Image (tube, rainbow, N blue to C red; front, side, top):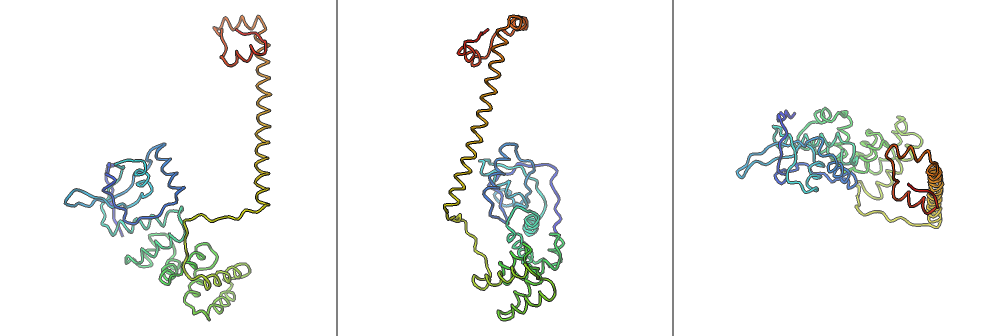
Length: 298
């Protein structure tokens, strides 16, 4: 287990000397929010790095804070505030994986892949469970499913559609044994009703499309029906009607205020009070409006 001793102060580290040991693909929307937040209020929490001493100067391995680091880089900054800890590269990678497991704003399959990566780095199931706060049984199931390339079953486990014990049994079974595995899960009351139907559908999709998942970065094309067009048109009409009602209400209120001011300015006593208070003029736009209506002006 890593023992990292943090620095006593925050250091400004050159961004081009920092290596991300466990790079992750970022959600564009969330990344833009990080950039906007840092640009608006600055960096609330420094990144964490460890120093590597080399011939041409110190270099750094990132322990945590990839999103903040990349946001600083996107903003054109040359340096980033960082806490420096004492840890070797292996410890940095494990710390990064643990941090990724602790995050909630990423795809579930990414978290599962991180568990597998920690196992591949030589950590036992019990160690991974202790570092991530997950049960040993769950970690064992994730590692085994990853070893067998069962990404589709992994996603089903993470979403709660199939218990991990059932997913393991399906993964270990031959094709002709899968129905028996589902029957066994039904008899053990692990899959009943709607969950059993979902499990059968997942098994069928797995048979047709394979164990892995394909992720596409292209937006899906949506078919447009006449009903959806009518609905969109009606929603637009309703929004415009609301805007018109608000505009008419505002116009009526402004007319009331203007008439009230016009009547007050026609009162000699009110004008006297204004003169005593040194309020001998009106805003130019209001004065022009009153004059256009034939009312008195100061």
